[in-house]
Length: 266
Ligand SMILES: Cc1cc2nc3c(=O)[nH]c(=O)nc-3n(C[C@H](O)[C@H](O)[C@H](O)COP(=O)(O)O)c2cc1C
Figure (cartoon, rainbow, N blue to C red):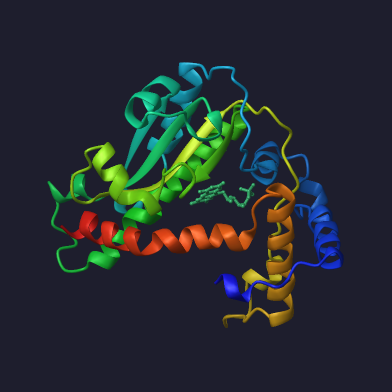
């Protein structure tokens, strides 16, 4: 992965940053005032939270959005481990990542259904995919509900040993039975900083094909996107790099793969 990243020169860095700053949600003018679209389009992953506490009823409303998410055959293949600052400290011995006020570890859960249904005895990949799909939808529902309530959030797969790359660690910490596996932690809190620019998105015409045949993204578009990703990462984290972050992921992948196999199928 990391070996394919382009070298960042000052010129390419500045050019990429200019293109990132020019990035905007593409909203048809007639719909620009729609409140829900504004919430969805303006959402960002925030990594700086105010120390102000998050009221219980606000957090309850966010969790309720997770519970009401759609799921395959309404199987609700998820569990949510919800934390306050205090309960996170008690379980993990440290603060919630980015000193957020609350956290939810979103878990794919086929354990509960296996107790009453025998739908997927020979199709573990389908069972796993369904669980991941449904739990991810619940995660996004919580994320959008938070945003609507003025609460910022960030989903974490790696940061703070809080997601699927630390599956074995979380299994032990949370006493997870077989068939329950972590996907991500979502941290929530009131923002302590303004939202940054939109991280680079591929153009819609590159990810959406309309003529019934898969559209290959051109190498030039991919090169430009990776250049923006590298520059954006450097601008946000001057003492790190996208390559370094990808190396962190790579260093954890083998163990995570082993842990997840053990957790889901045994
Ligand atoms: C499943 C998932 C896992 C993520 N894991 C991390 C993480 O471990 N650390 C982090 O800082 N951001 C993490 N992010 C946030 C992404 O970096 C972010 O969504 C992406 O850069 C786009 O930015 P935006 O959410 O502000 O639009 C994660 C996002 C998702 C959806």
